[in-house]
Image 1 (cartoon, rainbow, N blue to C red):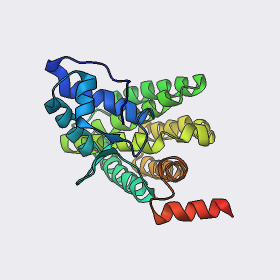
Image 2 (spheres, rainbow, N blue to C red):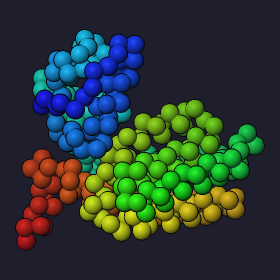
Image 3 (cartoon, one colour):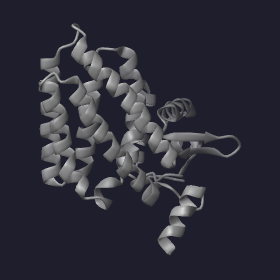
Length: 245
């Protein structure tokens, strides 16, 4: 698919810039799920050799935003319900561990973390009130990333950062289809922050679990209605059958 929205770039930052532009185009829907990306076409559009494009595409494959199919090419990923469940399983495991380390280990700074989370929550609230759904999703993910990074574990952070793009992709269709999401997103994060402020590990983990259950359910429904092609899987066919009855 030829996509005209990319800007030419400098060679010194080529691969990183290509990753950023393609990632943004995927997450804002300009490159829909299932879109095939052609290495030569992308190189021509970026006015650069194919090497940096190939490197960028490999990075996006590692992030889970692209998939490579032998003898067919490289495509924007299409998530199914199993993918959504797996994303939230990974997020839950990492965030639970991060919270326990944050509250138990003397090498962390809970007060500083609370200040950063409060600022992120303010951004989230402002985005929701102004109707900036993309900004609200970004602030949501920033809140959770701050929480994980506060554990001061490079490996935990590295694992989590590989899940962030997929999590945003799974949430991208929620706002228009499920407006109740706007009403709950700030409240739930406020409850997480309040529990952390009390240094209440069990309550923080409990609220996180409730938050993930809601996000998982909404993301599943969003995937079924937006990302999943009903002709490509038994889950999609079943959903299409239910809708037709």
